[in-house]
Image (cartoon, rainbow, N blue to C red):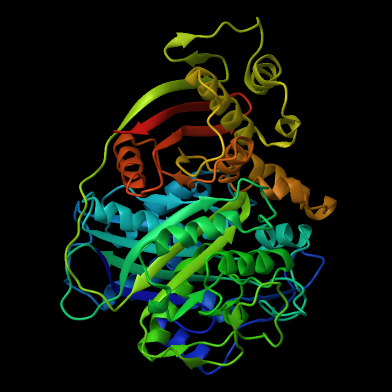
Length: 567
């Protein structure tokens, strides 16, 4: 069992979880219109004031790094002396979509790499183990809770400091504007008049422990990540991935235990509709559902953790918080949404859901109504069945070097491999280089598997690691928003999310299993092994396509990927 022993939220509504909860309970919203330097359109969002930014800043750290450190420190204050932060049994998990991307215009050094950014945060906090950055688009925060819970359950660590955070600037906001997903007024989740989402910035931290806690305590009972295998930007109309994630965490749980479902509820036309369908298919339309986006906006990497904490706080006061901005139901399924807070009926159990680009969906089941017994699960092993290595100049499949045409290397090599080995998937030429690399390596792996193509199942996961995130595409997108040539490219912006690589593989092969992308300071086989073993705690996962996938330039890339099966 995994226990929450401390938490903190820093947002424009407050510096502690309690302050943020009281603001929401009173109906206060941080959403307001802003003019952002370098952007042609105003944005309705939840942003820190200049005074907040200055008071949160830590000398020697970026704005993003400072915000994360402040939140983690706020959580640690309440449990001072409970454990040694610098111990080998403590892991730091950071959920974020873009970390320090706003530094891209001013520097070219390793501060831009999320893993190195996490390492600096660890150094400031005194954490000595290798940090893990979860970069799964909008589900990054909730995915971080899922990963941390698994690492504790299988005994890899005893404590996990889990923080989700993002800050907003020209890079991120322009991308969402280019995608035409933002509203120029306060968002209205699930409402018939909803016309888009609002963004927000925040950091939220939960500290988890596998050590049994005396008295009643919030527990993460289960968690799951599933893919729609439908489209990299549009959700499945049937809510397939969300339904699978919800069904997994609800396995063995009587729906009548639930006080509510805290939904993603971004106020976007198709996402809210998809969620309503998923909840109906899961048989949960009689359970109250709410969204907190009308208070904070969509805080990206922070959202899953922030909204989990606020929901815990509300149930401690026997409340299901109202959905701010909601008036009349505007989705096809009869989800039970209310603008007003209602009694939770004494129940202290809920499902939290999040969905995002790359077809990603996550859910957790959290409760404060069960026993606190220790249920550590031994690590499950796996065996590699096939392995492929692709670099800018060589291809090795199961230890055998593949003959390549003379003079072909780099980006051209991937196109040549596509034409010679695949040739039937034109979407390949719309992908960025990182996704092309992942696609080619996965195709070669599946060919090496040598049996009827493994498709259409949630039993196969796609789990990839790297150090460079999507830095090549980040730079290309930055060029598209240069002040002298401002024309943000929505297609480029989507590929600034490295988890799109896992989504492309899932879509190609109709994999509805877990898709996760992790960023490390450097390649670390020990940490990768722990993460992969923990993924097998998911009862639905029997095999995975996994490995290292890094792309620094058109002439400097490597995919070292494999297929593995549960032992």
